[in-house]
Length: 176
Image 1 (cartoon, helix red, strand yellow):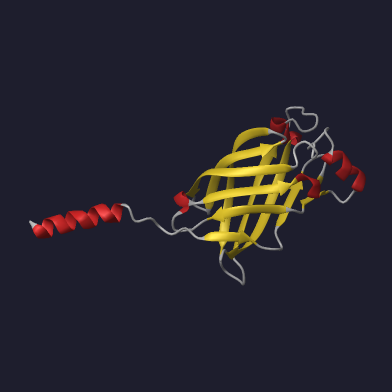
Image 2 (cartoon, one colour):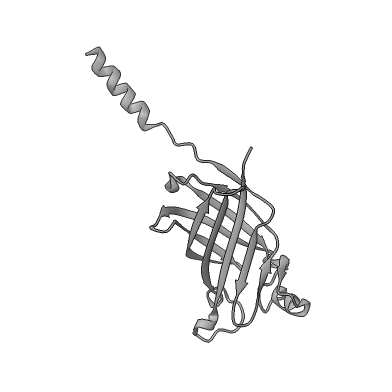
């Protein structure tokens, strides 16, 4: 009976053992590129918290923000227009935020589902991404599209040109 109780106790305790999920710090050299019919360029300031372990994607968490004023289209007049209330309204909404709700494995990598907040509007999106540790620095990377009309940005016409392609490449360091 004593052995049986010991076994039951071990099983109960093992149910409460959690997997250690690695915390990552965003490193210099990240890239956020966008390409749409009316504008293309980069955002140059990003911050966030990333918890991710490839073996346990279901326990991952991404909380990332992008500084809207850091937009760079290569044309200062277009940057000013993009920061204005006609597009991003950087004064009233200085950050683009993403908060994950779930992460799962796919055949080609992973997909994170969460809430994108842009210009005060929140929408659920899915972002396919890869994670590599080959080379000198671990790296998250992905490509996805955002329908700017969903966020009240610019004039929309219900066509493919309403979508902007986004490509991210985020080197990370293990958080200490």
